[in-house]
Image 1 (cartoon, rainbow, N blue to C red):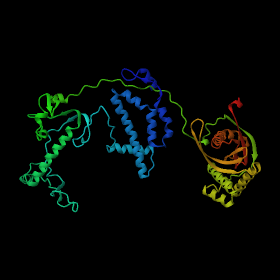
Image 2 (tube, helix red, strand yellow):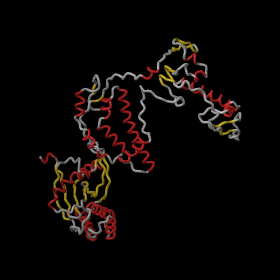
Image 3 (cartoon, helix red, strand yellow):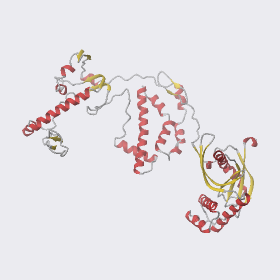
Image 4 (cartoon, helix red, strand yellow):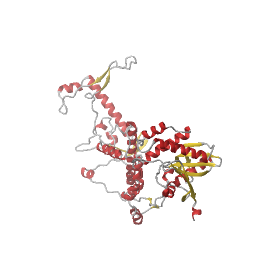
Length: 496
């Protein structure tokens, strides 16, 4: 991690915070806006990193523990974003930033956005049943006045069989349900008779045994110290402990006891109601440390797309040769040139594989891409055939390859991925040809070469790395304008 560690006496130094405040959060987050269409967790991770939320959490907190809890809550938010993405996968719905915000609102409305649980220096509040299987350095038991309750008025399974019969597993087994019709009123005589019946007494004994087991579970959760709390008005309310006959043992005078040959320290304290209601003293501020912010490092994305025109080693590109290929294709009506360019790519690719292309093939492609109204199909066929003839004349008997996918590591650590329009395999090396549907005249050739030269240079470097063979010529073919431009890259030294 870049930067140095600040160790101020209380929080962060004024110099560190002033340096941090000089950075505009809004500007940083605006630079991440382009990431919004991507994975929702990625968006939150970017916002977290760019806003330096961990440093802010440390600055806002009084103790390192409080800072850790704040940071853990941010991590819990990222985990919720992962859960949202998983639900989108399960429901076959697209995940988006807007969808995540609505999902988070629904989680908050349903009180399902629980905060992160602190792993240390924290108090865990659980029921006696919920504490089973857990352990803490100190366990504090409350509710000692809750005595055993008969299960005669509960719904539960009951069996009269002494042992289970595998052939008839449900024999002598029942769902016990005696409705408690009197609610919270004093039990009538009929209810008392039911509780004193054979079944009622048996279920009362079962409830007492269950209460004993539960008390054992709770008292064995402490590793170092066990604290039992009971309230007292006129007399202590310790019904639960009284049931096992342990009140004098657990609530006796302070001192050392000997239990099973082991010395145990027992300490008894009393607090009044006023003392219990008093607020504890605020924790003193403790030292917090965090990395001082450093200037962000510019980094390239992993994947490099040659069509972006970035990353070429040459700085200047020029037209070194111009060739006439066929006749200019007239565009009779307004058309999306990107769609027309796609159709021309397909036509050239098909002809490069099959050796020619029919009028029917061209008509089908023009119709499929909704550009048949703009150009004449015969003119397209003639232009494609002229291009193939130009290739055969300039590089006779040389194999050609169309729409060649390529993926290779670049020198700067990025990875190039793209598709080369047209390759001619000559004895001296590759001839790289890229198709552009630009209809402008020759006066704009230099501008066109400067725009697309970096793309050709990136592909040329990728071919050299992938095949070990150089690219001897680089061309831009303009099927609409009926020209082919040979591109020459001038290194920086030559320009100077």
